[in-house]
Amino acid sequence: MENLDKTKQETLEEVARVSFNLGYDKGANWQAERMYSEEEVYELLKTYQSSYSYANNEIGLKKWFEDLKKK
Image 1 (spheres, one colour):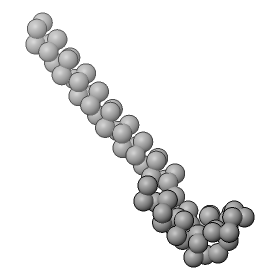
Image 2 (cartoon, rainbow, N blue to C red):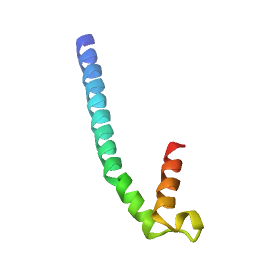
Image 3 (tube, rainbow, N blue to C red):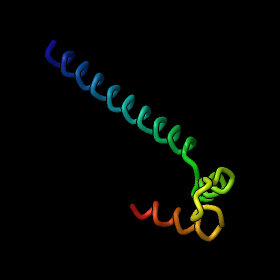
Image 4 (tube, rainbow, N blue to C red):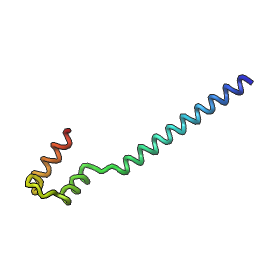
């Protein structure tokens, strides 16, 4: 009976570990699919530039974006 309980415990631990790893992998893949590349972010910023003078030209926008990335 003791061996059966030990086997059940090991099986439960293995199932938990496999389930955790599967969930972790699926979550990481989901997040990666939702993330934007740097190019996509830059293009979105260019599309929706604010009316501030530093962002009204491409050079100012690039500098602002690079400064923001460093933080």
